[in-house]
Length: 107
Length: 107
DNA sequence: ATCTTATATCGAATTTGTTCGATATGTCAA
DNA sequence: TTGACATATCGAACAAATTCGATATAAGAT
Image (cartoon, rainbow over all chains, first blue to last red; front, side):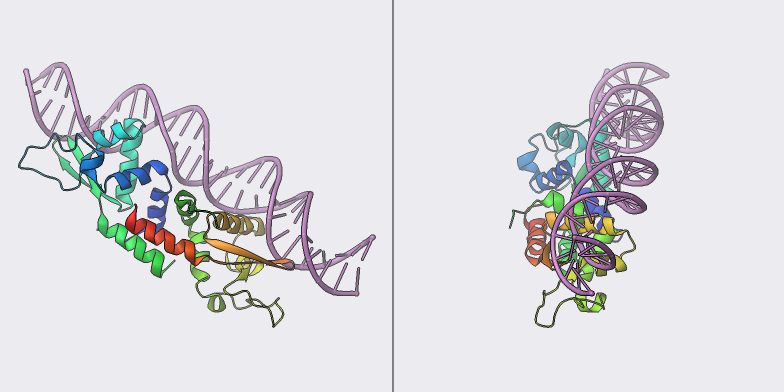
């Protein structure tokens, strides 16, 4: 939605855990076994994984993971979809593409 | 030379001044008028600009600029060529290309 | 209404980054 | 060999990021 803020993006990418989360979300089914277990069969949040599943994989506190995801969302790297009490985060491919383009053409 | 350390790269890119330096070094002749004034005519360090010229453009102390350039070099974004008492820094396009590729294919 | 579960936010401790001035090192010129 | 200049390194002050546990908010189940 908002325009690309490269500084916020690079800051978000300057952390191994956050980088891993982004990588894992490339293949959610593979990396998060319990993925979307809370969703009824007729609902699907394509590519989305809830905070709890991510926290389980990352070895950090719930508050830290929540904060990280929020940072990444503000940077435009992730988007959040709420379903009931869960928040599903998924990659925002548009921003990723813009970042690669930016490196190639502007930096 | 060394292998790509993306974390160091993203940290180096997480700063407006450093980002600007990298951009300016795309077109050294345009952005650094006094460029290569110290070099004898027969010597040319393609794309290289000395620390003093960069410092003049950035509004920060000599030690800070030196530190920034060193950070960027360690991250592989710049390479340094010494000529006499001057150090010329220029972009390392190979790393930049690797970073864009990394974003597209791995992150 | 109450309890439980999921996520977000707050406040604080610790670590890392920014930035400076002072000083060290290296090179050239007289 | 002394002096001047370019750059690098050091040590310290301040700002920002990391990370936690505690608490707030919000939704679902009893």
